[in-house]
Image (cartoon, rainbow, N blue to C red; front, top):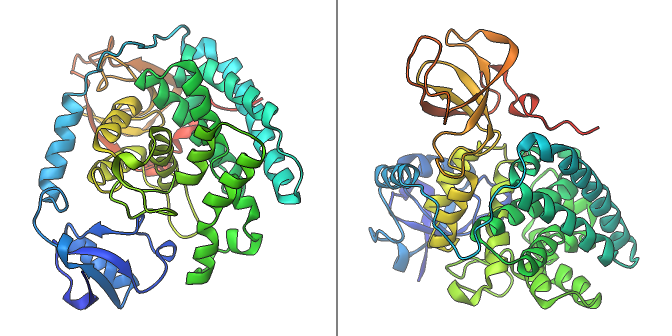
Length: 412
């Protein structure tokens, strides 16, 4: 049951089911969410005059509305108990980051060019290069299976002018890394990667002036944007691509509680590939700058996504995705308890809280003259013998640091 409520009368515990304007015009990332704090109320007041509240979901039920402190405690517990779960097909690294980087750069660059070409072909009504897409995904999958960290470093390369194409490549890499973590067999992994690479192909059938509009979208324009999901599925189906791949394009905006689009599927009605694609699609979107919303840090994104489990995403898969990303994902800007500041370079798949870092700032916040790499698994103390631990995560840009500048990610 919906009820129209003036934003001045909103309170924590209420469940917002509809705004007085298209969601894409606001910083709220999903259609339907519980108000968890007074800061949520203030944010709604900034953008809206009224909203619609779902009376049935507006309660203190822990499944829908949780105390922010409790959610933070749960997330911290997940961090400190983040141990890999053994699976029948658990992959082991077969190369170091440094060994894998040359091939990863080549695969990444080729995939970027390919998806740009595919998107232009679709826009012009030409045939889709399905064989080229499959070859690209096989190459990316091979690299991820040898060592996912090289390509994960490359996902830090972000250019707002190439968002749609680069987003597709990044989502493909994230999906492959997540699939590896889950122990998917290679045929399923390849289908997942292909679906992730082509998940937004339907956007090429959306008018460019709407797709690239920096201002507010009307409700009618947003309805057109939503059509990219069935449009993409139709394009892929016309090219006789696997039904699993087609479903990823069709269903990557479905949500666990049934409030997604286009079919309103919920829970187990959504196939696993589409759920994985929706998780990694969301993660990349909120960690990237957009015309209507600035990027947030990877760590902050994982915390937000953890609060969206059971409503937007399957709880188990969200927790597994957090473990896959390593709590402190590659590219995270972190401060140590000693005052040092560094960038996460690789994760430790057995001890998630002890990644390898590129140190950027000394304890007095002056810069190192030459880059210094430390592995918190083996370098447990600083030069003065103080134990090294990650104290917290900083937003990108803090101290003037762009994390991508300190990772081995530059393309030839």
